[in-house]
Amino acid sequence: MKKMRWYYFLFFLFLFLLFGLEYAKRFMIQEDSLLKEHFIYEYDYLQLKKEYEELKNLHELPFQSEDSFISSKVLFKDPYHFYEEMTILKGRNQGLQEGDVVVNEKGYVGKIKKVDDSSSLVELLYHPQTQMAVTIEDSYGILSIENHQIFVKKITSKVPIAVGSVVRTSKYSRVPAEVPIGEVKEVISSSTEQVLLIEPYVDFEHLNYVSIRKGMNL
Image (tube, rainbow, N blue to C red; front, side):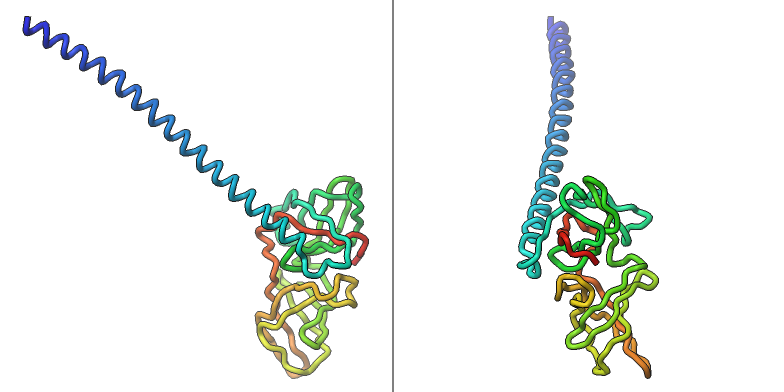
C-alpha cells in the first residue's frame, strides 16, 4: 500500500513538473514578447518625439519671417551619394520649383535639383558643384566643395579671420540672407590669400525634415 502511495506521489509530481514547466515556458515567452513590445513602443515614442521636435524647430526658423516656406519629410538618401543628394516628399503639386532653397533649423541644407509631381531631388551643400557667395563677419568669399570638404576662398578682406567665425549666406547668392552655414574650423593662410575650412552646422547624417523656400531660385 505504501508502495502504491509512492507511485501516486511520483505520478502527481511528474504531472506537476510537466505542466509547471510548460506554464513557466509560456510565461517566459509571454514576458519576452511583452518586453519586445515595450522596447518597440519606447523606440517609436522616441522617434515620434524626435520628429515632433524637428518639425517644431522648422516652424521657428529665425530667418523665415518674410519668406514663404513649406516643410517636407526626407523620403530617401542614396547611400552612394549620401552627402550629395536626397529625395524629399514634396514636389510640383506643392508649388516647388528647381532651384528652390532648402534649409532646416540649423541652417543651409541645399537646393532643389529636380522636381516631380510629389517628390523632389535635393542637391546638398556637400555636392561637388556647390558654389556660392558667403559672408564671414565683415568679409565676403566664395564657398566651394573640394574632396568632400567645404572651403571659402577669394576673401575680399585682408583682415585675419579667426577660427570659430560664423559663415552665412550672402544676398549676392539669391539665398535668404544671413542663413547660417557653419563656422571656420581652420584658417589656411598664404602670402596671397586666406583659405577657410568650414564645419557645417547641419547634421547631414540625420536629416529627417527640411523646409523649402518656395519661389526663390538659386
